[in-house]
Length: 240
Image: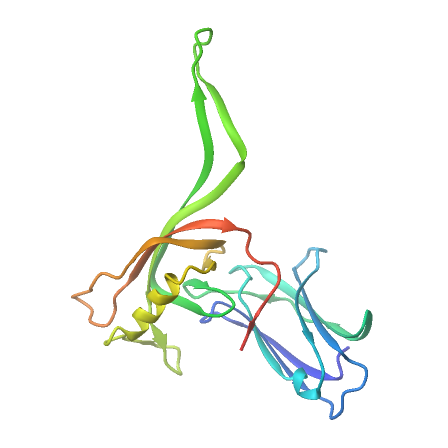
């Protein structure tokens, strides 16, 4: 049981992941030097460490984290341990929580955006295959590099700010649209997630477009193509 900190874990569908809020319950730091957060998919036994933080003062126990590497529709269990070296001082496992995404999420540990409406993701799986014909066979022989197995696709969505009531705010001056486009074209790897539970670690291809919507002023969709470049990161969280 945790007595040094008070922890709240909530799913934020509008941000597209799970938030962890911690506040200190002690006035002086004694034998704690590290906090470790582990996670598993509910009803499995495979725990993995997803975040660690060094603790040097009581103020370090106050933090807000955002877990972007959870898939929409999956239920997760979190465990938090306060440690002194390799020894566990306090620990607790929290009630399972379902991660949800209200739309299409794209982001990394620095920036995150969600298209809450008019979103769509098309995907195809790529394998490297060739065929060789021979004089002695009626049919060609299939030759495949079995290690090549990745996804590519296209995506589009309407990215808008939300007000305090989580209502969409039209982007009349296109400033938010430009902010999202700048992020999409900065060359960094990104997590792409859908409300249906799909999730990839991707790179954005060469062209990002945002055609003008004459019928709905301030509501221009953004379109881009993407390529899967690796596994979704297994360690790390957004520090709010």
